[in-house]
Image (cartoon, rainbow, N blue to C red; front, side):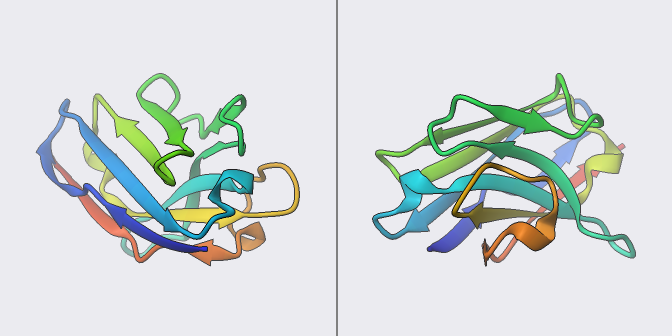
Length: 123
């Protein structure tokens, strides 16, 4: 599956953004989808995942209550609604797909990656 992330931008602290990740391929609905992020000089880190049917989601502690992941299998798209953004949320955000099983938080278990979209939160 090929992924295309979009929706990043510059926002003030406390603001909101919605990221989208459009997938190509007929098997999108069978994939666990995840969002990860990487800030300059830091390792890529887990943000959120959603199972193939949307029934189960998982979040990193630092985004719980602020970010919401969702998906629309009819549109082959996964979303990340980000609210109450903080300067520490500044990073390149990547969407990723994992087939063959449940969702994991390890980036190494994801086989397809989007190109990333920059999110910058100013103080």
